[in-house]
Image (tube, rainbow, N blue to C red; front, side):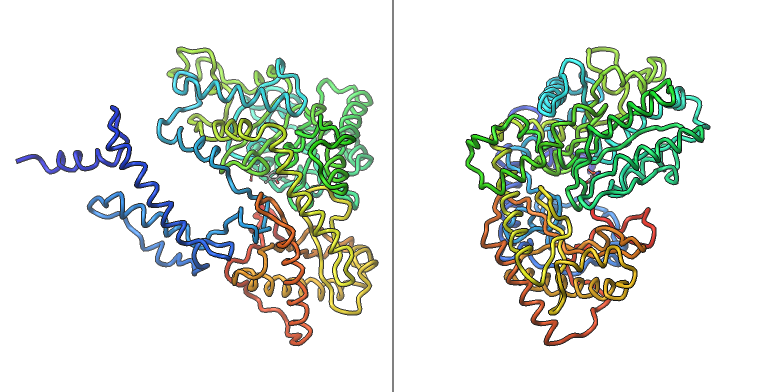
Length: 576
Ligand SMILES: *Cc1c(COP(=O)(O)O)cnc(C)c1O
């Protein structure tokens, strides 16, 4: 009799890709995947959801336990497919939800192949040509954003948050040398704008800088850092003997696509170094996880406009590029291919202008005894992670090759055109007002008002005039209710799913300002779906006029009001 364990081993061998070519088994592998895709396909409809929203039963989830016996691949696949039900289809023309792109087929294959053959980017011994791909993408992207590829270096890491971590870590070593080894005892700060991502707080917390040492510099109405205030706040720190671990410029704020002026920020940095005779240069990190993609337009001929974008689009693209082309002024840059590069999560590149900077965070040879005996490329010496997947690098490479500059220009131009059409309509209507006015990106923040409100002046009054507090709060509720109604419409496959941000900014007297948010990132977006947003808004307004009840306290299924920000004061919420 064969031992039961061997029996199971033989069965389970079928659940692995075969190590020696076996085309029948390959067909089984591919077919299993195909069946999963088929089941997902059957869940598609006119609504931008896979299947139905459903309820999320965490109670049952907590009762889950591993079973005694193996399941078949088919059973497992079935379970996995079910876990995707209720997901938004980000690429659906009726989805304008957040800065989450639909990944291309090429990038999915780029992500999948390393999953099968499992390279580890810790060194090139364990990743071979995939390590080369990381260098290739780093170089291509460095050249694209305007770095000198001969001087710069890049590494893939676990998200935009990690790029801020690397930036701040390098800066900390520059400002307080040796702090990685001995720990740091001096006060060091991170300067960023008040619209910077809350990841700045996470990073300060985790690095031991302390999140209270993140200094938020006020923004202009265009959601850009105010360089003169950056200068005076920086001066204040230095006067009191503090160090500046990093200045973070945000190029493409999450909710508003605000673009900080790197030229002015760089200038401030240089002046402070001189004025205080600093023996280090405060590290300048560009959080361009969203904005980086616009660098494909750095060398686009806007006068000739060979791709024939609409006039308003050309203006918007050129407006963004005038800031994006300054990226080379930053000492390091964060780049998310999983945001505006149409890759699956996680595909994030950290670029540093001077590769030599990485020496600041390199481990000593004796600290990494069993790795790195062979080969020439040893990112594991300076990356925070030890095991690093090749999926991020290969999916990024896939899209850079698939798109070329003109492909990415066309996709970005298209989504910006759609956003411009939306803004044009919202600005033209008496009941709506755009909050991130003069914006050049794919995201539109707007508020809807009841009849009889002068929408030309109301936003400024709500922002600045404390006697508008009650009105502001009432309008916040009004917009929440509009959101719920629009959401219900969208889930029926009639309207468009947009989102709600509970605090796109604070009023001068400290109240959160709610806004509806349309983030267009689908290549399948069309003008008719922009119209559908407006139709849905008018329908919702009419409903509220007919039935002016206060808003319900719970959100409807599928509501995407952003994730709770664990660092928030006032319980405000921030999107991804
Ligand atoms: C999304 C985002 C981050 C965080 O990036 P992840 O990839 O989600 O970790 C940081 N900064 C900005 C401006 C972002 O939009």
